[in-house]
Amino acid sequence: MVIEIIFLAALIGYFLQSVLFVIGSSKSFPRNIDESLPDVSVIVAARNEEKNILNCLKSLNQLDYPEDKIQIILVDDRSTDNTGNLIDNFILDKPKFTKICTKKEIGRLKGKTNALANALEIASGEIILTTDADCVMTPSWVKSTVSYYSKDVAMVNGFTTQTASSNFTGMQAIDFIYLLIVAAGTINLGTPISCIGNNMSYRKKAYLEVGGYENLPFSVTEDFNLLKAIHRLKKYKIIYPLDRGALVTSVACDSLRSLYHQKKRWAVGGLKAVWQGYVIFIFGYITNLFLLLTPIFFSKVWLYLILFKLFIDFFMLFPAYKKFGLSKDLKYFITFEIYISVYVTLLPIMVFFTGKKVKWKGRKY
Image (cartoon, rainbow, N blue to C red; front, side, top):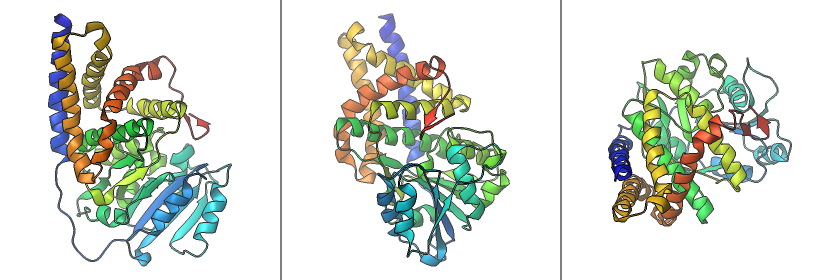
């Protein structure tokens, strides 16, 4: 009976923080309906993305934004496949696109962070938007995002889902939305703990005020690093609207190996989270661990506790999925529940017992 009481206590904490995530992520923000749109720079860092880059380029070309106000910078980050040639051929007659290659190291920067810093040196837009080469954007992505930039807003984050066509990809897609609801909830309630760089935007002015990436400690999660730096300025708002028009769709990991490396990279980057992030993780860890212990402790009471956990997660996910028009993807919900319980339980092992070295895009950090 003691173990059930511990499970219940963890679930109550898990439920209360989930309510806060829903409240925070559902917060609405004023939008600028002024017809004078700001100049923007969209940055995509690509390394060995020949399988995905054309879909990304096509969606970028279809963005609904005045061509004289948008600059799209594509960074070929020392690709060893056909990524560079595919970019060259696509942008040949499209002046809003600019391609650069990562040739110089800026400060002590490495990998993707260095590629982004190279692009930011030539970015002319007032607002910077970043995404990844395996992503496609809605045509309204830029307009929807910049509409939230009132004078006191320095960063607007957006939601990303993933293509869901099987249990393996579907569970990843739900996990993305789940984690971003947590990110949006905490940011909108004033305590930023995470964001995602494949749907992120910020004022270049704020980026320069923190000294750029070269002035920040190196991190394998450069997006989170910049989020924290702008938050520390204590002079701007950072917001995370739940906006279907700003939704981005990425490609799910295609193997357990690549999924493992993704989760480990995020976990290592998350070690620098604020203390509230650790509290959130502890409640999630205990709750998901107990879900895995079901075969050992199963009873009628245990069944009710499991059902309560499933209700909490569905309660968190459903409003966002309904707003994004993705409710059909919730058919992978049970697979997601098994998946999240396994990987959350294994995260400490990934980080503390296998070392903090990270493999990412063929590079080791």
